[in-house]
Amino acid sequence: MARTAADRYSLPIAIIGGGPCGLVLARLLEQNDIDYVVYERDANSTPTPMYQGGTLDLHPTSGQQALKDAGLFEEFKKLARFDATRFVIRNTTCTLKQDFGEGRDAPEIDRYQLQRMLLDSIPSHKVHWNHAVQGIEMGTHGWVIRFVNGSTASGFQLIVGADGAWSKVRAVLTSAKPEYSGKMFIEGRISHKNPSYAAAVETSGPGNMMAVGHGRSLGVQQVSDKSYRLYLGMKAAEDVTRNTLQLADTEGSREKLLNSPEFFGDFAPELKQFISDAEGPFRPWPLYRMPVSSMNWARVPGVTLIGDAAHVSTPFVGEGVNMAMFDALKLMNSIKKHCGGGIDGQLKDCSGIETAVAEYENDMFPRAQSFISRCIASEGIFFAEDAAAEFIDVITNEAKQKEVFGDKLGLDV
Image 1 (tube, rainbow, N blue to C red):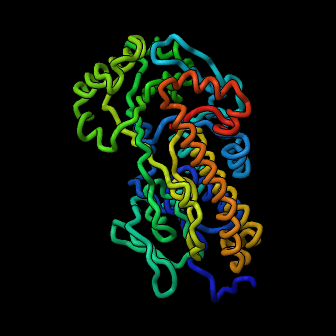
Image 2 (image 1 turned 120 degrees about the vertical axis):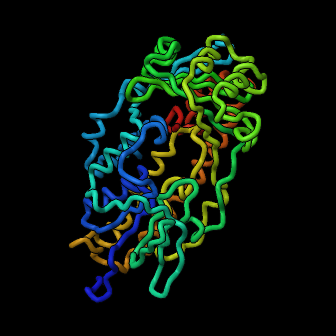
Image 3 (image 1 turned 45 degrees about the horizontal axis):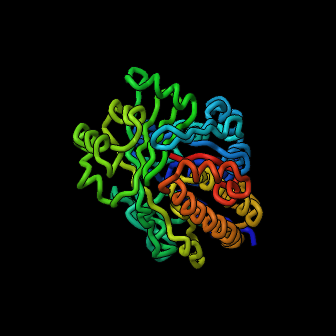
């Protein structure tokens, strides 16, 4: 039944979170004349590369397809690095080396560039900054969003949680929470003036090098300004950066990373040199994932999740942002199918919204289960004792590669 003027909501859709998946959904809604508002916890619209993650590669059938449907693919191509798909794997002594991935249709874009492009594609007044969510609760006439700044919002046909790993929206749908994977990255930087810059260019070029083995990894990856990120991966206790490694003490942490056999003391000298020269402050990235078994919550009317809010996992199959953008696309397609799109900012037929969301979630659950399961399998390879040889064996065996990585090789960091 079509919605009448009397029963219209103030806005059809609220999107919690202004990251890539939330903004892709916003752009798709904009194109389909369905009104929305985005609530973002950040204070303003200026992305800071230092704290917006590293570089992402977008896949043809997920991330790229979402941008095509959003009418942004040509703009993406202006920013994308099509020469950055090379991935070099080494062992920790640099006696084993193999290159992969050159020429793949998986161009790289920095996370903050992607976010900026998406922000520029929607009206600025539709993004409400400094609106960190405190919680969501059922009120007299539907869901009420409570914000840390003391304000509230209500009157939405649908609330979409795109608020990342520590989603506040998720609690409405499930009691499940992300679990620590037992692994983390520590991030440093290699600027153009860094003594190791030339070595980074030689080692990684425009792409990514990763030396792996003995439960640890050292990665050097180029970003859009042609500087490099250093990623030190390890099996570690969740609180290691509050105890053994006090990252606020950059030089003290560097000394332990370089010399302790628990960390990178037994890596080849040419690899350790990257740690010696890396610019701080070092930044921890503990890696969490949702339990596979949690991807099956019962439908709760008026609320759903996309991206990391639904299925955060570790970056070892390189699908995180692609999964998130594909979620936004699938949800939008279901809304168009069952609600007829939009007219004058409203859903043409609001009675179909629950059918649309149920269809989206029923599609998302098995995808998410597969995604998280493959991440766990890939973790086992990346952090194996003889990880480089195991990784090369998987990548050179088409059946094994598809089983773990699908059509993708790399990391989302």
